[in-house]
Length: 236
Image (cartoon, rainbow, N blue to C red; front, side, top):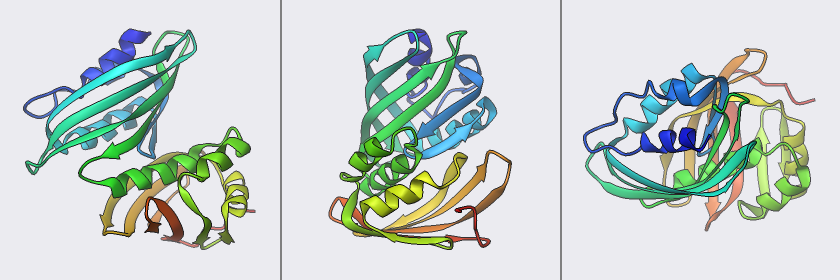
């Protein structure tokens, strides 16, 4: 099973653009769930397309990783990456990863958490924000996680709801549908603002998109506003 993790991270080591990514299909289960910096894709074909987009942003890349725990059911790891962007700018990223294996040893779930990017800390904060929304198993744990992401008086507004503070936002997240695919299409960031375009679909196949605005207060988010392409009333 560890060979699947090693095979995945090895794809991030290249000197003249990424190699073929077809090997991903032998590492991941057919219906695998993959998450990177808050973005999510479901299924090995969507995973392949996602990585083609992700790795095309780097001309060179070198990644080192270390397994921090490993068992029959899953793993955790730490990773660090140095890269040259497609535009020629050097940079570095680092974070952690966790996952779960399928019965045949392939990767069924893979979660990559982005903790640092020397070129774009705004994207790191966006990833932390989205990671909170995907933490659905334990509301108390999610509430604790929110303390390192949102200001105490954070405000959130979308076409269906408006809340303020950690407790209200935590309750709102518990009532939102589970999203299986969520892509950050493009984004614009300044010193304390970030606006990004997103596209998503739910488990029933419903697709829609929109824009989301984040305002930063230091390393915390103090305001979130969401606009959808169509009025969304999925929160009951």
